[in-house]
Amino acid sequence: MSAPSGLLDPRRKGSITGRALVLAVVLVILAVTLAVPIKSWFAQRAQISGLEADVAAAQAQVDSLKLQKERWADPAFVAAEARRRLHFVLPGEVGYVTLGVDGQPLDGTGLGVTPNPSWYTSLYGALQQADRATGAQ
Image (tube, rainbow, N blue to C red; front, side, top):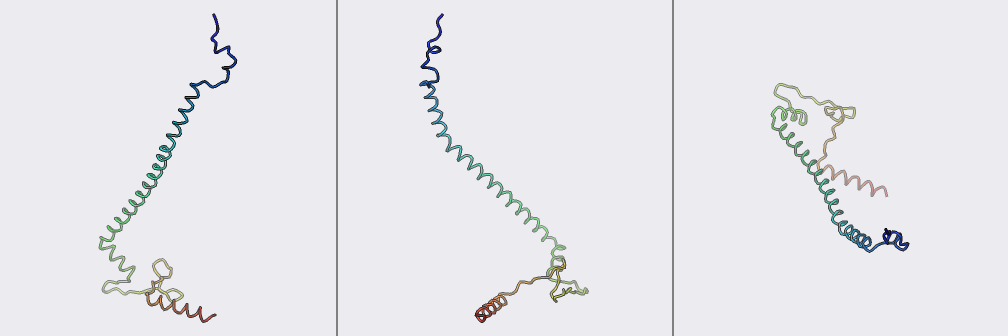
C-alpha cells in the first residue's frame, strides 16, 4: 500500500489550494454584498422603533386629552373650575380672596398668583426698561 501523494509531499503542506482560494473569494464577495442590506435593515429597525415610541407618546397624549375632555363634560367639574379659577360664587355665598404678605392674591396652594400682564402693560414695561438703559449711558 502506498500513501497518498498529498500527505508526503512537502510542498503541499501549508499552501493554499485553488479551491480554498475560490471559496475565500466567494465568501468575501458574499460578505461585501450582504453588508449594505444588513446595515440598512438595522437602520430601518432603529427608525421603526423610534417611530413606535413616537406613536406611543402621541397615543398617551390623546388618552390624556380624552380624559380631560370627559372631565370638562361634567358640569360639576366645570363649576368647580369656575369657582377656583375665576372666583365665581353661587348666589347667597360670600366670596373672598386671601392676600399674601406682598398684597398679591394667593392661589389654593399658598403660592402667589402671577397674572399674565396685558400686551400694553408688557409694551409699556419694555419701553420703560429701554428708557432706563439709554438714560444710564
